[in-house]
Picture (cartoon, rainbow, N blue to C red):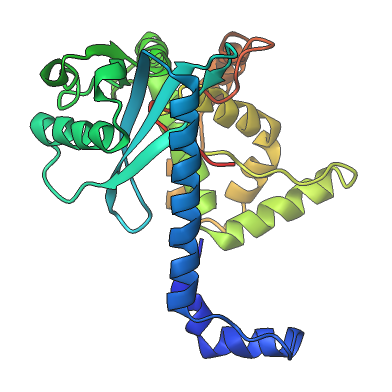
Length: 290
């Protein structure tokens, strides 16, 4: 996750020279050429697979995501069945989105990608999250538009729990209160360190646990956050009650009421993911991490 220019950094070169004096560190230009070479080799392999499998119809999945440097990218994955009746899901492109994300612009980016791979006539449908700027992108290219099932499930569960928007719903209040509490520990190294100490003091044999933050795009992260809060309720309460660590005014804001804790405990059995069900439904699109 570091830039290629790292190889030119004097400190990095010094480190490598210490570890292996006989090794000459390649410069940034050489590393870039090697990466480009690997990219071209992989692209040729995917192209050969597409040609060999002769898929007459396929679908594509797309999504726009934002990098850590706040740059927007459009990722595209193709899905088809090979001649051996095996599902193939090659990632075809990750395109930098440097213009306004209008429906026409997204549609044009997809069309350009399909033309580059020479599979425009083989596309049957495009799967996306049905946001306002992508819900009809397939129509302009004569493809069927399909909403992502995982995203629909997230919307349904979030609406049923009442956490799709800030409201006076009791569950929504619990989520907000729990998220605020977890956020405090996430931004306070002192509180986090003390939480570990309190856990060890209460149960030295049990390895310390960390609080889990709720992610609004992952419906089952509500369960993860609630489960961990219940498991760490008393160590967390002990830290909040320590005036040398948390001011009284902050403790009153962060501390959850007995009603919150009771509701969370009641929700856990219902929110638990059934056995065999994916713990992390994939986000619509092709953004994957090994």
